[in-house]
Structure formats: C-alpha cells, structure tokens
Image (tube, rainbow, N blue to C red; front, side, top):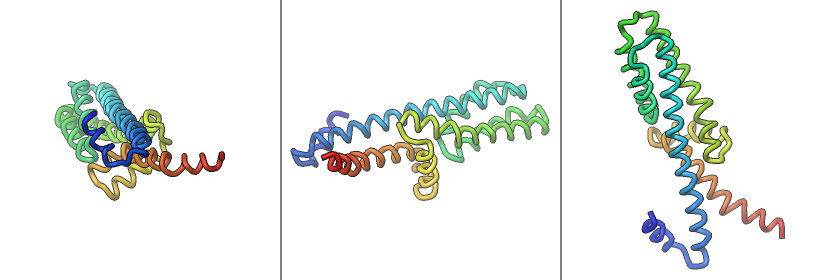
Length: 176
C-alpha cells in the first residue's frame, strides 16, 4: 500500500504532492468505510432473511440467512440464487408458505435496497443517502455489474475530488 501510494505520488510535481497525498488519503479512508458499510449491509440482509425464515418455520434459517447475506454483494444474480436455495430447502412446507417466503424475501430486498444501503453507506461515507441512491441508479444503467458493487466508492471518490479540487479553492478565494 505504501509502495503504491509513493509511486502514484511520483506523477505529481513537488508543489502538489502534499495536496495529492491528502486527497489520496481521504479517498482511501472513504473506500475503507465503503468496505465496512458493504459488510454491514450484507449482515443486515442475512439477519432480516433469517428472521423471515424463522417466522415461517424453515429449517436451517440461520445458514440460509448467512448465504443470502453473502450472495447479496452480487447484484440481481446473488439474491436470485439465494432465493432459489431457500425455496429448495422450504419446498416441503407447501406452496402457500413458499409464496409467503418469496414475498418476505422481496420485502427484505426492497428494505435493503431503498432504506438500509442508502442510509448505511451515506452515514459511513459521509454522503447524503440520495447521492448513494443516485450513484446506484446511474451505475446500474451505465456500468453494469461492477458499477453497482462499486458505486458508493465511485460516488465518494468523485465527491472528494470535486470538494478538494473545485469547491474548496472557490470558497478560499471567496473568504480572501
């Protein structure tokens, strides 16, 4: 990490190295917080899915919740695989409970996507939840699979660069 940072800073002239290092440190901190937020988001999904499965009497609900949480990092495909595994395990419970499990799983996904993730990523990364929601939306449209996974980190990086390179100099000139 230190080696890569030093090599990256070699691209900047001596008078800008301190500013570049500060920006790089800020971006690195935000990306680290992104990783923590992603882990907490996955844990929240796992816990919510486990609760839904316990409510309907599904065996191995904790294990299935753990699988759901881990697979939640993969957009669309991960939750689909998790739901498929859950339905295979819950099949003996009957069609009525399977429908209720699907509805419960979809509710958990909606809560995760529209409440937990924006609030969690926003708080951990000091970004407004609307900014996270917009980043997820645009990343899904333009960057596909990897864009959705990395969109909060990309949004944080862009915000840091705009703040450090554009807004802060303008505000300093305004104070002078």
